[in-house]
Image 1 (tube, helix red, strand yellow):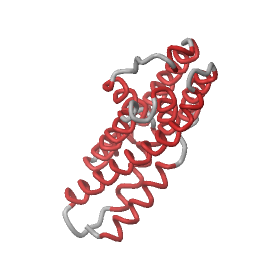
Image 2 (tube, rainbow, N blue to C red):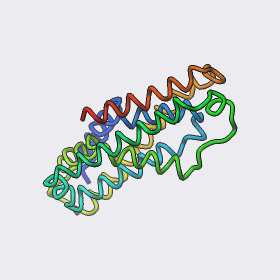
Image 3 (cartoon, rainbow, N blue to C red):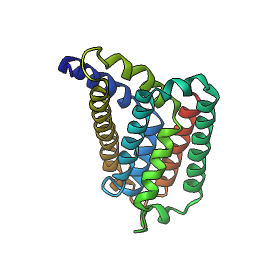
Length: 199
């Protein structure tokens, strides 16, 4: 694969992912709630969703999904409802349940939640549909290029959302035991739902 083309893909894909959106807000909220290390399954979930989007695009199913636009709309509103549900649960929890309890959501539940948020984000899917084809060259194996781009995209996804989690975990210590913590985390969920609804 052409290394210049790959470098351009890395810059383009990173630029798209680094923009704040539902995934970033969700990652920050989870990191504030549980800390960076305990919420590492969030970027893993986003990474898996990135892989799913890439497989859909490279297999040609992405074109089919685009033709049935109502499926993207349906997925979007499922994602909005899920984020609002999380916001409601957070707002109605006592501060001690979030900040002082040693109980943490299961690893699989964290992973599953991140996967759901990302898979129901039409912006992420449409970005994949638009970006990947631009970086596939006529020269060389299509499957090899698809594999390389998918792997790089997944690594970028994990890195970007890990960075969001790491940066926000700095504020977790300052919010420890604070009644403001639930409001901030719940507000991030509502914000993520609003961003997703506006797409």
